[in-house]
Amino acid sequence: MIGLYVHIPFCPSLKCPYCDFYSVPFNPELAYSYSQAVIRNLKEYNDSFDTVYFGGGTPSLMPWEITQILAKAHCELNCEITIESNPGGLSTGDLIMLKNSGVNRISIGVQSFSDSELYYIGRNHTAETAINSIRLAYDSGFFNISADLMLGIPYQTADSVKRSIDMLGKLPLTHVSAYMLKIEPNTPFSSKPPVLPDEDTVADIYLTAANELEKLGFLQYEVSNFAKPGFECKHNLKYWKSETYLGIGAGAHSYYFGERFYVTKDIKGFIDSHTQQTIPIGSEADEASAFADYAMLKLRLTEGLTYKECQRFGIGRAELEKRLLNIPEGHVTIDADRIYLTKKGFLLSNSIIAKIIYE
Ligand code: SF4
View 1 (spheres, helix red, strand yellow):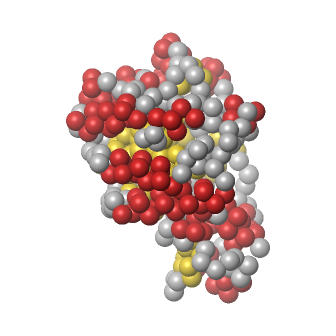
View 2 (spheres, rainbow, N blue to C red):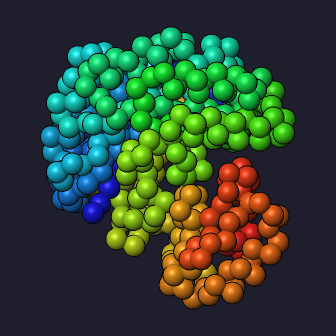
């Protein structure tokens, strides 16, 4: 089964100061031409999909074009179809149109229920707008709604995160993505960095968020993702399990029948080409890099990495356990058939996973 990712590179005119996703200010004519190019590419690849994900950017800026794209996509029965949106971005009419076109999952960029935290990260909505958007989506017939929460915001504390999560618990949500704020190169935050909470506070914030979400029934299944049972994001699971997905659009990445490739971040180039021009990424020809790619993604999941999976890459259990010797206690659990990171391990996931993969 193949997943489809469609990158929609348009946002409201002002870019959030921490964001390095590819997007330009929304322009209706450009958005229309872009959607036509997406449709051309869909015809060219001619695949059937069991998950579709409209990410960006802010896809909710162009609900009509999304319905046109979906009308041309071959979706399997019960296909999970997600659209990313921002609070205040969709009216009841837009939501009903999207619902009728097959969209059945909405991911809303809430980030925080504290107005001062939203201000520090340059978001152009309030907590109240976010609450109203979630309720509006639910009242319009969306019963699979995810909220993004940002951790490590300037002046954020474990207590303020707990307050945001208490609010999440009162809303009809099935999924929460809780991401750490990272200062990315070439963003306004990188040229003028905000004052971030210190390392101990960030650790406290992350562990508080994970524990509070679990108390509300959102079970952690990935470093940054929590879901009510049965509501894990099927599309994103394909990324972490190295399953096949096709990316369409400027800046979109694919893992398509064993080949990784991407499309350049060039909206005009994408619109002007009959078929998107793809650029290959690396090669999995050598076993060590194939293992690194696979294990890096798999260890982000709470289910972890099985010994059987490692054997496929010529790595035996003894070799894997030798690599765990340098990892401080309490960060990795060794089970009968697999290893997986603990919550403390997830907090340091990049360095822990690097030790497992490369040492
Ligand atoms: S965070 Fe979202 S809304 Fe803000 S600029 Fe990035 S893609 Fe656009």
